[in-house]
Image (cartoon, rainbow, N blue to C red; front, side):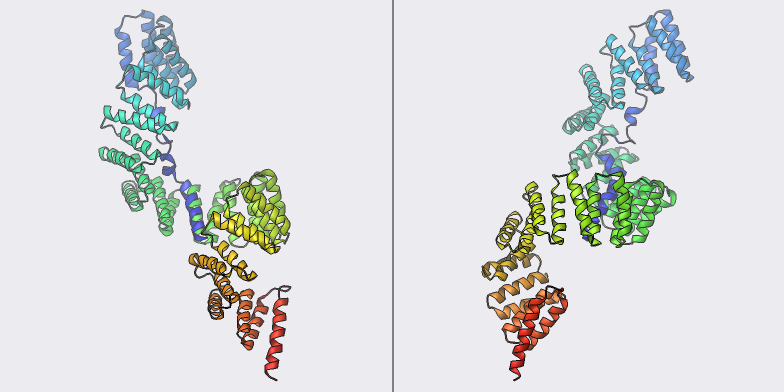
Amino acid sequence: MQNATYIFIFSIIISLSVPGCALYRASGPAEKGIFTSPPHAPEKIEEEAITFTEKKRDYRAYYSFIMAQMYERHNDFKNAIEGYHKAIKYDPESPILYLNLASIYVRTGKLKIAISTCEDALVIDPGYIPIRMMLGKLYYSMSQYNSSIAQYQEVLKVDTDNGDAYLFLGILYMEIEENDRAIETLERFIEIKPDYVLGMYYLGRAYAKIRLFSMAEKYFEKAVKQSPHFEKGWENLAWIYRAQERYDDAIEIYKKMLRLDPANDRIRSSLGDVYILQKSFGKALKEYNEINKTEAANLNIHIKIGLIYYEQKDYQRALEEFQIVLASEPENSNIRYYIAMIYEDMERYEDALKELRYIHEKKPNSIEIQVQMGRIYEKLGRIDETIKILKESIKIEYDNPTLHFSLGMALSNTKAYDSAIESLKKAIDIDPENATYRFYLGATYEKIKDFEKSIEEMKNTIKINPNHPNAHNFLGYMYADMGINLDKAIYHVNKALEMEPTNGYFLDSLGWAYFKKGMLDKALAEIIKAITFVQSDAIIYDHLGDIHFKLKNYQRARKIWEKSLSLSEEGENENIRNKLKKVMELIQEEHK
């Protein structure tokens, strides 16, 4: 259970980590600048402008162009646009004018008009590379990735060594998950520009996306060697170390980055996340609390701190952290779910139900919430409400085998065994290879004394999972209790004990099998051993009493059966009372 809790905490905390998520996107929010900066650099436009003025033009086009340039330099975009339109009117065949006009539209946020302007230019001159480069970036900014790719492919038909086109094209291939093509394209870029840091960086990311971590590491290391202050390169190299479970190497990078920039809370958060991976919760908490000093409003940090406190079973502190988040985000169902988990662990079941009901109102079709509510009702002894919730859930998601299984278990707890069996069989119909479902169906058949079907399902369970200790023990115990296949009984129980050698119930089953086989000394040894691990089970003491009775240790049998009687539930002790009556008669005869 501790390990399961850790996995849960780990998965939530890491999901809040920015660098890990960014690595597997072609360009995270901090990196899209390569595309979303003005698609055509001002100095490049000036070069094109010189080209324009050097050629013989209609004087009206020339004048309008010069005026538009002047307005643009003074950020008077309205008049600049008007000027470029006039220039195009007098010189409609010049793609340079369209390029400048499109650039103004980009700077004023009118991307659709900019795209339309570029498309008009391509009608005039399909081979004009600056327009295609701009259009590729514009399509990208609108998430029209295939259209963007097409532009860069057209550029490369004209200019096979255009490095920028290869770089942008490689990034786009990553965006659409064509990672092999991305790698091929970016490797071509590296051939053209071997010392270009962004090429190494994106090639590293492409290899990371297909989990070739050694190659990703190679290119990230090249990037940071070429540019030691390239923060994203270091950050992604640390991520690669994390992915390879080289946590100490990742920590070294994060600490180095923090020495250079102690106020970098994103890196400090990543350092805390690595400490979580190492299960160094105290160190992680220290880093998160450091962030909290300067970013008290950072809700993700409060969530991470709360989850660590929860893992450490410091429930009150965990609640305080989650309540801070809830105060800012009262509709946050995830936070209410964490709070419900805490209340459940604190056995504050009604408080847990209050939170879950709130979530249920917002998400009436959430199976997870309904199942958790059902589990809490069961803990409160309100099985009827558990059954009601599970039936409602099944109406929403009939093909969910877990729901049918959970309903079967709840019905079994009410001793509605026939209905329980029907639900368990439905679960198996949906998921026939689930060993757990088979096991509990077999156990339920045993409760209605249908031993043949019970044995059949235990065999099915073992066939699906040969290392199912409970199935081996259950089958062995049934054989022993029925007095049949006693060698097989001993074999199966020993298989169970190989996996759980200190399980008192398994040891009792072995002792019982030896007893049924008449091997009383071995039976006695095993059941005494069982009691060292399980001290409060009426059946184990009953078995021990049977052995002593068989050995004619009547006084000892009497005391042990009295112990068994004290541990048994009312209505299940008639057999023990009869044994006690019989042994008392024998003791009295001995004293005559």
